[in-house]
Length: 424
Image (tube, rainbow, N blue to C red; front, side, top):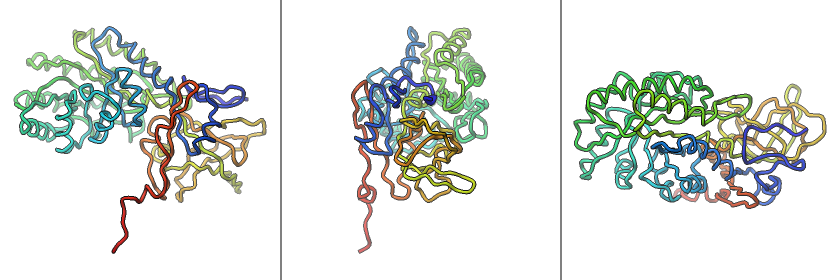
């Protein structure tokens, strides 16, 4: 029986083998080794196009939230598609530029922007800063005046809306560190309007990640549009309304709303409130790349215990942090399914931590040496990986029809300590 896969335009079973587009994943593992991240260009483009098509005919911009996966090949694909970018660090800005992205279509989010990052972003000509506090506004104003320019800004509103997601990825509640408290937003806009180094261009909101219902978006949109109305009455004109990102994907049995449905509902709210002439922006990340990637890993040992059976693989928590960090469920399927009777295994890695697991209690018919694919691994997989236990990070491959491109080489041990030195 062929295992079920989450929604994906890039991966599927053919002739008893899991493929990435037109290529057997077993061949990629043999060619590039494991652990190995494999991404589908087709899946990335189609996921982005769902936003672009839903916004067709409107003044709009889709800014990919690159913290989900910042590989240059992915940024390159999206830049060619006309995407903007949502960044949260100076390093991410440098990646946008290196990948051929347009800084003028880039928004800078994040609560802790340094002076050096602000200076570089202004010099690069980014679209705007998403302001997250009063002190940040003061710093950006001061840097802009020192450089003899004006910084375009949007204030990120914290609407105190529960997105119903994991507390670590919820960003729109009043006890979260993100955004400006709703009651403080209008006074902060008044402050910004008086500053000579500031140009107000928009308003921003982001309430969390892996959101699988439309209602939280609607609640947040209503609160944001109330502020837009209030700003208009005070003569503070906005060019854009940014609804952020956070749309969930299917890992297991989640049923997130369709991209087109979410966009249409929010556009209808904007139109009904009389702001249809303003540009509308979105900052999707996971919903662009999440189901466009898998992590390939090979079984090293099968260990049978008194109460648990373990499939010990060559990927580990340093390669994929989501299960350990969020107790997240990840799909795991054999690349070449066997007809044997399945056994319940915990899929674990070689890192010396009890928290080093990728999946628990999975029924698998496998043998040592078999390949497994961890599905829906395109977002927050490689981006959150580390070198814990002096493990080199995995290689990354992009498949495009019948072609495979190595878009990141596997790290070698000597690279990991190349910047260190012994004592004299």
